[in-house]
Length: 260
Image (tube, rainbow, N blue to C red):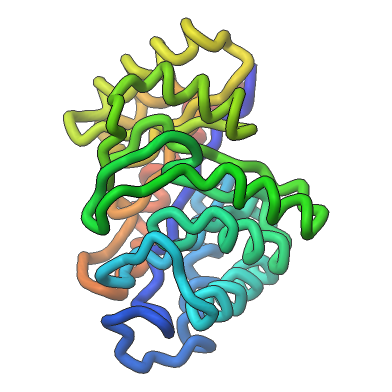
């Protein structure tokens, strides 16, 4: 049985290069991110992920200023904690994610459209598995690729989650899969069961969002991990921080599920 991954996401403020960047100091962002990562570690999370989630409008591919800022933040988080570290860049900049992850010593990247085509706010988003594979080869990187088989910020043109999952693994080389459903965690867990029936139990599949304290116990039973974002934050807005009490409560639900 694989180890359940409880991943907390650090939603960073608007970064340099974003249309809504307000001039905030990247070094201060990095300090805040490192402090929030320590909160997640103390709460018992297994992994932390950095994301340029507040850049708006969020581009599919980012520029050099965003990559540079994410590398500074990621390096600070890496130095502050021994948790597994992940990176997600832009809406679908898998190559940039690999480059940042390699530079900071992260263990995985999340890629929302690794294979196939999706429609999102920026238009059509094409799979970037070739660019991800080329960047990994260029850098000699062994970073894991966690691919969304179904995600909430764009819609696959086919909408067949098991098929998308199979393509992400066979064609895209995904190491783990992620499923998110706006309709609820229950539907995501049902999708995960369908994916595992199609691909077998050898591939880990995580719930990628919409998880709450109430639904986490079901996720612990029906998935191989959970990626938690907004549920951990003190507030919304463009610079949300991790709430220690929320993190500890969610972490305790995970800790209580571990064999004794």
